[in-house]
Amino acid sequence: MVQVEKLLLVVAVALAAGVPASRAIGPTNDRDYFIAPLPTPIPTPFAAPISGIGAAIMEDSGVCRIMQVLPDSGAKAAGLLANDEIVRIDGTSVAGFTIDDIASLLRGSPGTRVLVTVKRPGVEKPLDIWVVRAPIKVR
Image (cartoon, rainbow, N blue to C red; front, side, top):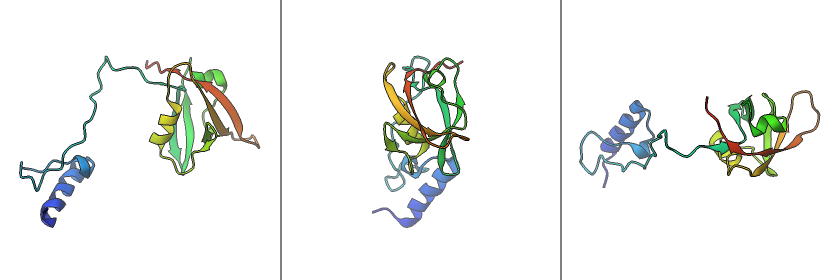
């Protein structure tokens, strides 16, 4: 059984290192200190490219906003704009979703389409915009 003091030490080490506690490794190999790390893929220049709509998103006061639309992207071709608020993806409300959840819904195989519903400043009704996913070009 794990002792409370040892568990608190592991959590303190994890917090100090900025690592989630589920990935922390204590200061010794003592099984009471050890919490098995989760496998983390190591990015390499040979990793498969990411495909998506080609827009940078951010959380802003509890909503997901498009921060930037990348040039030569599906988002640009479809007419998405910076400051558009994403409210639905393929008809599903994203209220309460994390940015990571929303990003995974926007990613997909190149050539596939995704329906992005946005609220645009100055436009009364939400807009349904079909976007074709493509490999994201990092410059």
